Amino acid sequence: MPQSHGGLHKKKPTGGKKRRWRGKRAFEAGSEPTETLVGPTKQRYVRTFGGHVKVRLAAAEYATITDQGTGKSSKSKILRVIRNPANVDYQRRGVITKGAIISTEAGEARVTSRPGQHGVVNAILQKAAEKP
Image 1 (cartoon, rainbow, N blue to C red):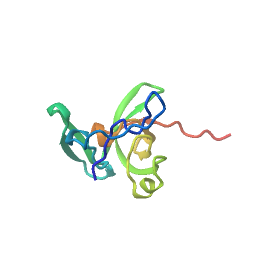
Image 2: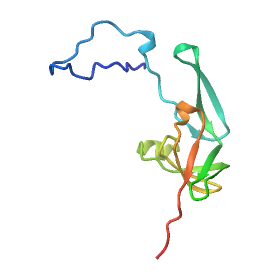
Image 3: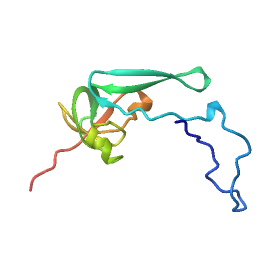
Image 4: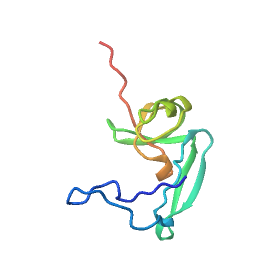
């Protein structure tokens, strides 16, 4: 179902409510979210405004992991989704979104990219919990 991303939810400078003054246009319609899962890489290409192309990641097998301590980045296989604070249901189903904690061969990492929008999974390596 398309969504409108107009500014009608905002109020007028006088404090009054904004009223719709025309119907929806095709370029104002949104789209369903791309819920990226763990598995063999699958990409979808969507035409966007201005004739550009947006890559949507339907499934991801690898992530680019950056270790902030050393500043090095490497490609690592995604094993599973540990936690997803965006949505409890996403956590149960293993959907990767920005902010999700994933388990990789390099260790646990937090996703910093938006796979459904950017077409890649970039993540920052989490420091292991130190035991007292």
